[in-house]
Every structure is written in C-alpha cells, then in structure tokens.
Image (tube, rainbow, N blue to C red; front, side, top):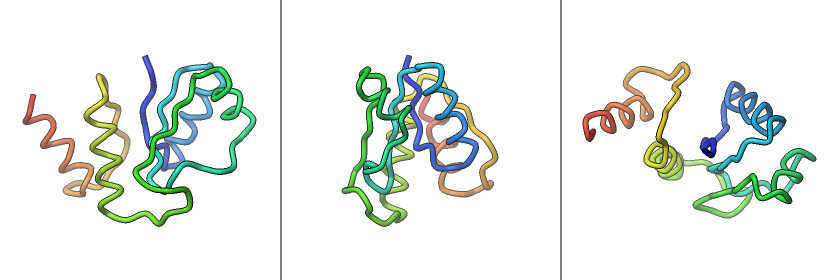
Length: 104
C-alpha cells in the first residue's frame, strides 16, 4: 500500500524520510509543482519505481487556496486510511475531513 501525502509540514516530511528509508511506496502530491532537486533517497526511490510525484501545476509555482484544496481533496479521496495531526479547528482541512466523514 502506498503512502499518500503532500508532505508539507515538518512532521509530514519526517514521515516521508522514514518511508523512503524503509523503501515504502510513496505518492507525493506536490502543491508547488514537482521538485527539481531531489535527495539521493528520492532519486533512488524513483529509479526503483517506489515514488510517484503528482502536481496540478508546474515546478516553482506559488501555493494558493485553489491548489491547496485540490491537493488535499486528492489525498483524502485516494486514502483508505487517514492519519491527522494537529490542524486548526474550522479550517479548510478540518472542513474537508468533516465533509468526507459525512459522505460515508
């Protein structure tokens, strides 16, 4: 099973590094475009077909609410299991999670 995330927060990036080290399959949804500079671990994961980058816009693009919404919705709709860290109550992500729970 692939780990799917935007890996934007420091906590999410730590999970990314652990998943790369454990050679887990990863889908990295990139709100600001696919990165042009990769770590050695990311490069190796790409070679081994364990890492997929997805982005709704070109590399180096600016983050905006529409793109953040697209990325969060994509991740949430693909997930079979969702782990949520500290998020602001009544914020965009909280609202999306609440709506998703009401769909089920």
